Amino acid sequence: MASELREFLELHYSELEELNLAAKQQRKDRVPADKVAEARLKYLADEKRIKAVTVMFTDLEGRFHMLDYDKKFLLKSHDNLTFDGSSIRGFTAQRESDLRLGIDWPSFYWAPADVFGPGKVMVFGEVIDKDGTLYSGDLRSRLKSYANSQFEKNGYTLNAANEIEGFLFKGANAERRFHETGTFEFANTGGYYHSLPGDPLREFIDTAAEVQRAMGFENEKDHPEVAPSQFEMNYSYGDVVSAADNIQLYKLICRQVAHKLGHTASFLPKPVVGVNGNGMHTNVSITKGGKNIFWEASGEEKLSKFAWDFVDRILTHGNDICLMLNASVNAYRRLDPHFEAPNQIKASPTDRGSMVRIPIGNEKSARVEVRSVAPDSNPYMVMLAVFQSGLDGAISSEDGLRQAKRFLPDNIYDAIANFRSASWTSALLGEDVKGRYADLKQASADRCARLLGTFVKAPEVQFHHEVYNQFLWNQF
Image (cartoon, rainbow, N blue to C red; front, top):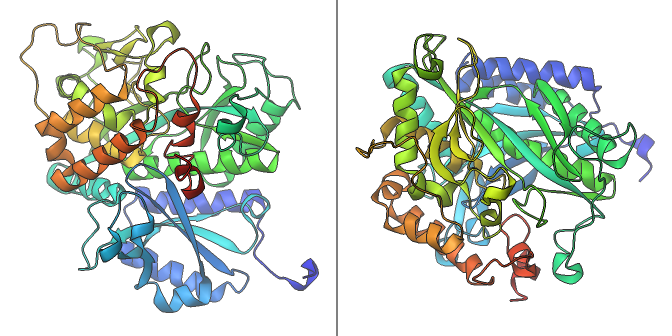
């Protein structure tokens, strides 16, 4: 069909940024969801150039899913959007497959038409069970409920920002073809902070950063990372649910931009042996009444006792929650002490091998950085594990808890065993969801070599939850 016959919404990047920042401010101000829903529905009805609404949700393992609903259909049926949950790994069984999607109207985004297509807007969904309750396997809904309960009971606002590393590899679908090629090819070998203007890595970073800015990320800095063809793009703090949403959008943007440039953006934790892996350092803090309660000018490392108790609880449960923060076979290659890997269950202001680091901060920026997080993990599960462990977990009576005496597992089998045996993970997820998650991780692990060895094996990529599809899974 000739493009001149179409009249679909296409907005300039500056206008997109203005709209997305206004929506972000509404989330910060906690504008009631029903008021936002009313405004969004009116906007969709009035804006004739919108053809479809992309509704996004995340499965139990952390894989991102999107459904496009025709706008006119959605306006009539937004309170009854059904989908087949049995086709989503970790969701319902085939005999009880029907689930529904609710719309989280405050989490509404305008996206660049040249990247995501004209005439579309995006919104996060909430998975709803047959009885009308929030679905237990939807970790986003559980995180949102937990964050809301902390605000209502204690006045706490849970804040987070993530430093998400990735690799840019030559060729489209490089991960899905790895079992055929056995290798990844770097798009650039410049190294830390170094790439020439216009080279493939710099072009990718610049383009992805422009899309992030347009979608209201409030960028801070971006640069090539230590490993060849590795990148990192940093953006501002947000409330914990928005921060987790941003992780999913960040990876989506990177993958889409890379694909359009003929490359692959990969968030495998350790796709190439011999160079640094990809981390997702998770910076967290808590405010109450607008005040950062992690800060104390006279405290150790200028952190309050409240913050240190938060750290101690995370360290106490470090082995329990390791599988939640490092969700794949490949993730345990990254927990290698030779490449600045944070595999020591301790806290330190300087040692980057520590699970928890205390960055330099002030009254506004004081925070705790959980470093032992891989970028392929379910971001909602990560945030729930970090905040609920930090606020509600136990504190070990062990002397010297913050000094290195223990290490995180160096393989997924030990991590699964720790996860299954821990009573704390049952408290975090409930027995049903905990069991399903462990079974999913076991199924992937059993398809891979038990010993990691010195090179990346095809199955650890082929059966990776962010890479596999039904075709690849059936090749076992």
